[in-house]
Length: 206
Image (cartoon, rainbow, N blue to C red; front, top):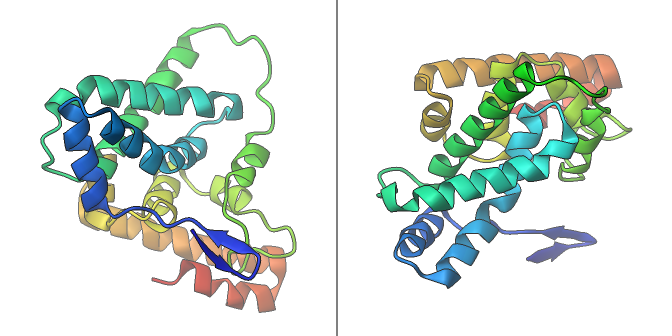
């Protein structure tokens, strides 16, 4: 962890290290299992929070993701990064939860999920001052563009890895991210005025 003034920045281990831990965990190394889960737990939570409409389900979906992953480690051969592999599993976990929710009775209204997602966002991002919530802006995007933007700009996947997670072509991911950026610049400009809207280009710049 590094301090810059009052801000604490958590450094994410490189994908090579995380993949090595996953391979070691496959061999039964308990310390590697702990490192693997710890390194990617925040990424998984942030990703499922942006896909899931129920904030109370985020922790359960993250846990389900890791249970699925640990149960499938014997099939992981390191052909892609462990981060990409795990986020693909997280995406399936969310999709399965949607299917289950569609067939079960709805007992109550879902609370405001955007507030919960906002709390999971890093603070101090440029262009997000004066109470403008990244979660609110992302919530206005179509689901596929939101997913592409979250994977590449927030989780930090390459376009190639994001394409693998989403099951589409790299060019499709690039197009979705570009459209998401353009939409976010417009939304920020409308929310914050011309000065903040111009400054927000820093956030969504390539």
